[in-house]
Image: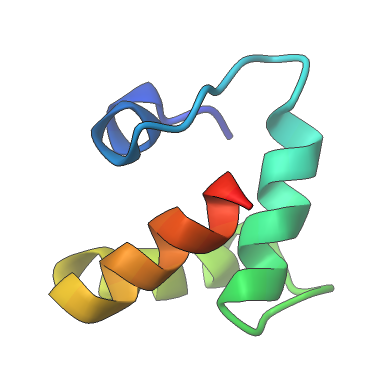
Length: 63
């Protein structure tokens, strides 16, 4: 789950200890709570390609 490049770029601390919390929070942010990792990361990839959605993701992760 840890994709340090993505989290580093967003300024989010990512470690093995907070991986499950991050995964759950990200799934919730992109509207896919309860979905599989592949589905969530496909949606996250789309968010990261959109400047506005990328900023929304970053802000919500920092809350």
